[in-house]
Image (cartoon, rainbow, N blue to C red; front, side, top):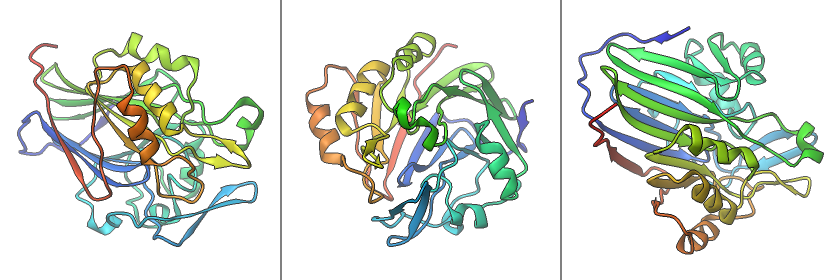
Length: 280
């Protein structure tokens, strides 16, 4: 079922921005849509429970709090975990916001009072429309942990955002989610070529002695596989469980065999983008 948003007078300009709040939390604004990803707003020094007796301390203050956000149309949630949908989000976000996520997360969100969860299987899509503007969110394959500990962590999805206006495709954005390198990543550029911008989760998160998100070097390898025009690393320094910081990513990017332009955001910074596409 299509999510229909109220019409506005805002004209489609082809200009957009990514605002980096911290960790995997961003606000993506493009052609009248305002999308919040993986909302986590705990303060530096606070702890999140990651399950099975594991905790993580937030090391970096988020760039803003929920009250500071612009009006949000929807949330895209890669997975329901304490560092991606925290207690602040559960308490302060509008319970009527539509949330596009995976099947594991929807009942957990419902228990927290969020009744508009839209679950996706891998490769399944959800359309969001506002007037003649359309956003199609498609779930991408993700693998959160090696097989021997996969049962200890919630399943995760990446996502593709396809923006169009009046039937003309304008911009394609990929978010990796908390994935490791795995074979199914090679399927993404086959089915979704010409990715304009990728937000890549790095950090080398280590739980119970096992790395469960890509290191900086692995994240750059994922960029080489996906082949976006521009890539921005996120999820690289916010929590005490991260073992591979931004310097690891930068070093690997300097050696990368790919035509991608790498861009780096600190908390509170914005990346401005523009679509020059002229055909569907």
